[in-house]
Image 1 (spheres, rainbow, N blue to C red):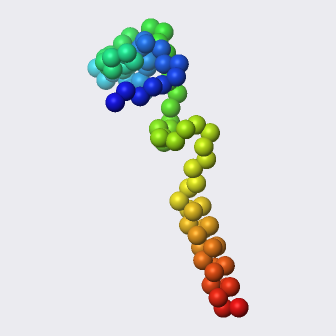
Image 2: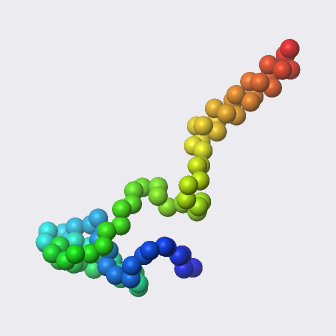
Image 3: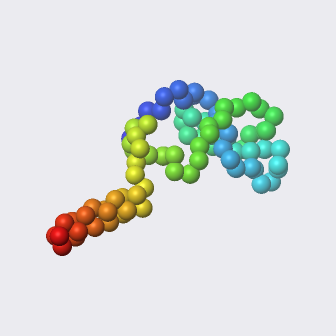
Length: 87
């Protein structure tokens, strides 16, 4: 499956991996074909700022409740039901 990404340039992007045999090189990937190789740090390549958890099937600007929030909400509802039955 191909996944559409808006504004993705068909060029090299830096990855966060430094090339171990030589610290003058770092890993980069080519967006158009997925190839990855060691590239001199002297080149100006695109950067892609990501952090753990950024990948999501939900559209942007959609708040997804955390499991603890859902648990607290569920316990609150349960407490209301128990209170109503005992009254």
